[in-house]
Amino acid sequence: NRRTHAAFGRQLESAATMRPILLKGHERPLTFIKYNKEGDLLFTCAKDHHPTLWYGDDGERVGTYVGHNGAVWTCDITDDSKTFVTGSADTTAKMWDTQSGACYFTHQFEQPVRAVSLSVGDQMMCISSDPFMGVPASVHVVRVAEDRSEQTNEIIQVLSGPEGRINRALWGPLNETILTGGEDSVIRLWDVETGKIKLEARDHKKQVQHLCMSEDMTHFVSASLDKTAKLFDSRTLECLKTYSADRPVNAAILSPILDHVVLGGGQDAMAVTTTSSKAGKFDSKIFYKVYEEEIGGLRGHFGPINALAFHPDGRSFTSGGEDGYSRIHHFDTDYFRLK
Image (cartoon, rainbow, N blue to C red; front, top):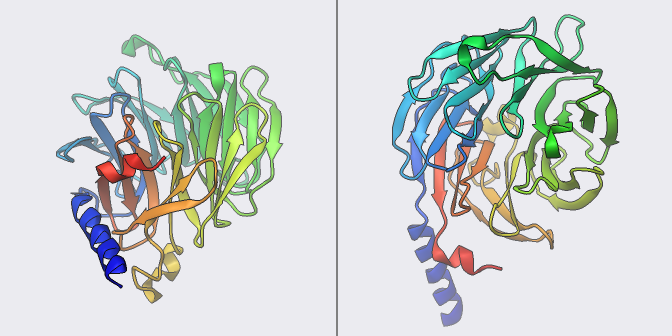
């Protein structure tokens, strides 16, 4: 009995040392979180029209990007951290100067914009638009001009065809392919040159909420409402691993330094009012990437987790919830002893 008490005490101690930093900057549910390449800047998007910039280490708020008139679904940042891009339900994708917060270019579409993603090297960007008024969902590829005054909205390639909206679009290795996942639960690999589908993976049973590429771009993890996250080979789309959760998964991310996967989700926002924060399963769960076993979890949000992002040094991660809060979780030393 004494031993269990000691173990419980240690658990409490580690819980006390791993106090998350609470970021309160949004009035509506979080939708997306992104770190820049160095990890000193943290960008959060929410349904409240204003993407927000924070310092990545201590969570100090730097400012907001004002200009969208709808929910901001996704964002991306160039490797040099100078250009910030956002996609919004107001049918635009905007390009911002990160430092001044000024929007210098707006890509206007007929349909709501869902996913934006910059290519390796930041010379191109793909923008996904939702299905609307009989027009199917599609991914538009545009060039990112080095000289901002020369930026145009000329679309060099359009990938279209899938039913339902495309929730995430990612560039594959060498920018030869684009990966998409969305409402119809199919993950597709597109050839950028031809605009045709190369491969399809039908491993998920419900809609795919999130995709996250590994550092070396050899594999990626997907999160789905079918209560699983899956690891895929990014060239062959072979499903390598499955991480089963007991709740719909809204986000899954890969640690850049350890073989760990972090999952976040919870009951649908509609069903949440009837559940407590414990029963609603709003904690983020950490899994071994290779063994598919759960290591532990971090509680805290009062609603489903909608967004997750790992700090590039792998020592902390940020979660964003339906409750409008973001939490920066700095791992304690015990975590790094887990192999």
